[in-house]
Amino acid sequence: MIPTIHISWASAGGRHFHNLIPLPYSEEAVLHIAKRISQVQDFLEQRILVENISSYMAYTESNLTEAEFISAVLAEADCDLLLDVNNLYVNSFNHGFSAFDALNQIPLERVRQIHLAGYSRRDSYLLDTHGERVHQPVWQLYQAALARFGTVPTLIEWESNVPDFAVVKAEADKANYYLQQSLLAQLVA
Image 1 (cartoon, one colour):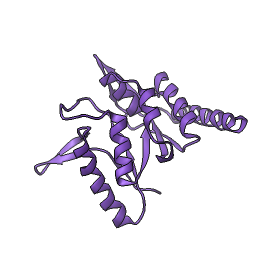
Image 2 (cartoon, one colour):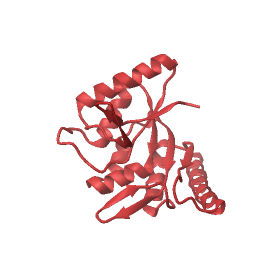
Image 3 (tube, one colour):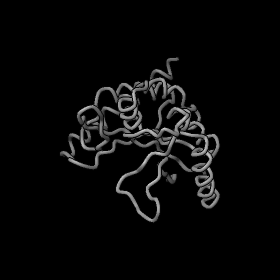
């Protein structure tokens, strides 16, 4: 198993937060987080995965897009990515950018795992809840991710409002179907 951390911060001034807080998308933050990732990788003597998080706010200090920031962290720390497709979609909706354009900016050779989950709609934004079925726009983005990155191991996250096993299995079966379709497309190409 490859260790995974989220690209975020969760404490400040000795206080720990309940949720993961996004970093500003800046060169300074790239260097800051990449240094810490490198320390972990040096200690473990292996590359780790970093995961993109859902975001509900933006920093005025941000001067990079989310995809540029993630790509820069991956390059600077020489680590790999656990791509949370749901988080990418939620962020694109909440911040008004194209998830498909962002997906196409992520380096091909860095994506090692994919996560899928459900979100909830709240007024004018989406909330990553891991408490519903994967929504159709996320499935579409997942299909685009498979077309771009190939058949990457995929995990369905469902941590709240957990339904009967048959419902979760149906979601996993759907992901597996798209994986198989992607594999067939690669074989034919």
